[in-house]
Length: 49
Image (cartoon, rainbow, N blue to C red; front, side, top):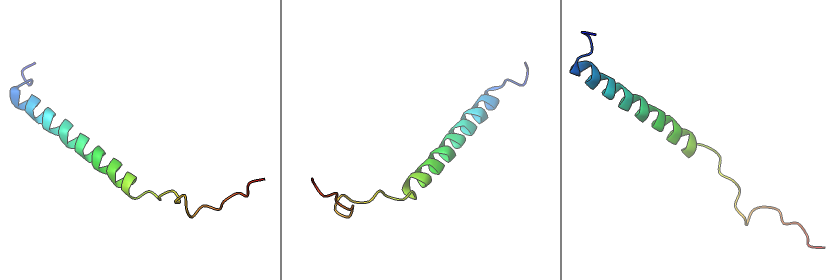
């Protein structure tokens, strides 16, 4: 239990923040690079019976 110092917890907090930022960056990258759905105007229209 001697290794549970304030510096250890500070390091742990910084590591958790860095991992969270890395995961957020990956998620944003995937979201911004996904293909967009087609516009309503460019979709083929079905004829109304």
